[in-house]
Length: 101
Image (cartoon, rainbow, N blue to C red; front, side, top):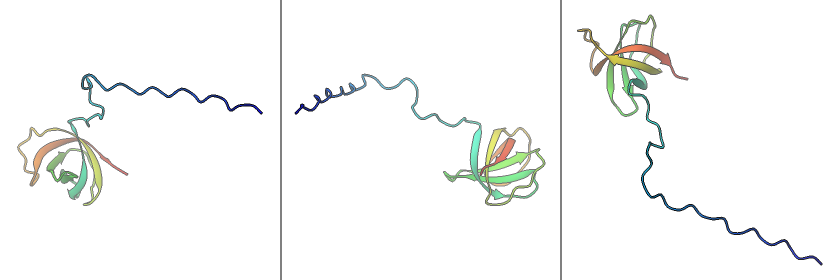
């Protein structure tokens, strides 16, 4: 009878970190990108958006599009430089609007 092969050596464990990481392990979304649900739809140029965090935005867009209340959209935005009232929320200029899903 032969003997069973010797077991492999115990794996070494990683040593604890000596300092925090230099960059975040979870990348943050770009600061000029919003994702949320349409709260004021229509054919524009003004729309309403609410993010999952509950932040409300008033979007101004020069794109020709129609949005429906409840749609999820992704918006690349910039500060709004026009003196226009697009309703309640933080006023921003929508550079691009993409439907999600």
